[in-house]
Image 1 (spheres, rainbow, N blue to C red):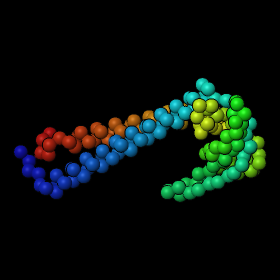
Image 2: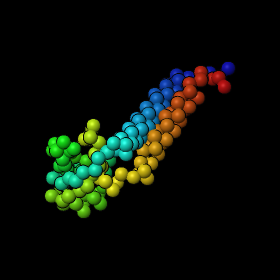
Image 3: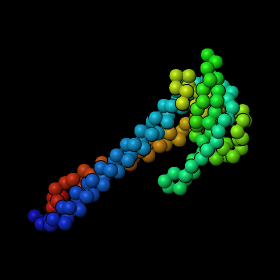
Image 4: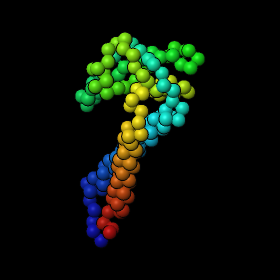
Length: 157
């Protein structure tokens, strides 16, 4: 029987904690893919196309230095109620759209925060959420597999 020293046991414990973190990261990644897919699916099922007006534009840099772009739009619902929502957009749309410009959107009448531009609502764009989900599942599975492989008692094969 092979002897295992305290440093090796400590390293195994650290690695197991790291694998748990990787697994949780994968779960969050998969969840974001499923949630995005569900939001887009709701727009396909019950989305309403409406004309809107861009009232504001803003952007900011995230923690990793990537810039995110947002448009704030005002539109009227089916009961003529006025909504004002901020939506994420591509850099191309951001730079090609001025404040005061009209913009055709699709929104969910049961959740007006769920909206997108009318021309971006395609099944092809929805596939990105499926890819996110698959990547998240693979990351989670890899984390769990490594966790259980290293979970065997040291010195046993």
